[in-house]
Image (tube, rainbow, N blue to C red; front, side, top):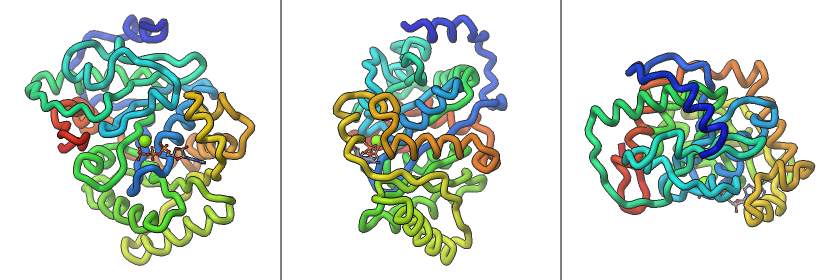
Length: 301
Ligand SMILES: Nc1ncnc2c1ncn2[C@@H]1O[C@H](COP(=O)(O)OP(=O)(O)OP(=O)(O)O)[C@@H](O)[C@H]1O
Ligand SMILES: [Mg+2]
């Protein structure tokens, strides 16, 4: 167990059972209609940039199908979120601290079990998660791709969602489909676009305009663009080196784009988007992570 995790444990108050306690931390979930568009790269990048700015950050891998935050950030956690859900370890034991970086709560990839832990235990875990997350300034959640029920109920419970879009043939329609589903809830999250893997900022702006034209026509809204991140092969190199981009190639173009995106998120403009408090609903979904994991890694809620 790390020093920081020990400190957290010392700070942790006795369980209060108040899962709906308002949190001062900001919770940003990262999703996409299409897979492989850079959600994990961006989640890790934003978490590292925020940590470098001295915020207390927890990055949580909620991609229960293809969990790989730990790989991209270069840590080897002994336990995962599913171990916490199953009661094999405490939250503090599962969290790994990255030196000068965020804390990481990893997930197991595609664990096919179905475990019924019962409503009382689920509530206790949701309470624990609220208490625990309350120690952080930011909770960044890397969520799986797609518009399946597991993913969208989870994203829908987050206060802020970054919808990642790359310039690929079906990207616009996949992103539109996700945005449409997320807008259907009673208290939908604030949605922001992030354009990734474009050759230039101009290309990114054109892609955002095309997407916004479609969602304006059909959903009568336009989404702000939180950032545009350019394509650079160094991103693949840093994943192979198992190092976050800002450590591996901090001066590279995509690292600078992610830094700018992070600064937008903490600017008055980015901050104003956050309206819905992170509380019981989101943590209940998290607490159910092991409960409803289906073979193949799709979490159904
Ligand atoms: N800005 C970028 N420049 C170059 N390559 C990138 C960039 N962003 C992401 N990639 C590459 O795209 C691939 C997918 O990235 P990543 O794993 O972050 O996507 P994802 O959306 O999390 O995927 P999944 O849906 O499987 O979870 C990686 O191999 C990474 O190297
Ligand atoms: Mg991913």
